[in-house]
Image 1 (tube, rainbow, N blue to C red):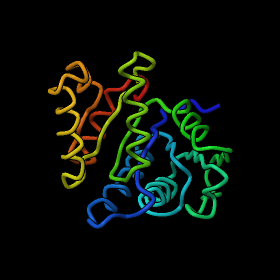
Image 2 (cartoon, rainbow, N blue to C red):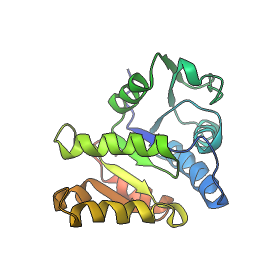
Image 3 (cartoon, one colour):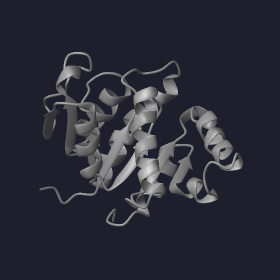
Length: 186
């Protein structure tokens, strides 16, 4: 069992077009290590996932990676983590990651990252958890997402409280400040 404050990071299995995202991913891994927090993530060694994990490991952080068997080759499963878990399905992967985290962080990514975010956001909206959800809006990448969530509220499809479940920060310093306020982050 792990007693360290654990941060689940959802992010891309690609680097994306803007080099700022790769820098933010590495800085996030370094932040987790510096604070003594454990990284929980999708166990890939590619894209932003790999960058976060390698930076966290190199700086001495504990790491928990969770990957479904069908993605072991595609995402280059990173077997040298502190804990490496192989699941049968994507649903199991998301559950194991979520259940082993004290906070959720979204870095730039694609459809998979959005799927993970919206599941955690929906569960918060339904009162199933109170874990902080922090969006690292690297180089304004998530501006359209923030606008979409505001549109959902403005369109009458969610209460205004939906926006309160997300903390949007522009950089890793903002991420550290937001996570530091979480229960157990010390």
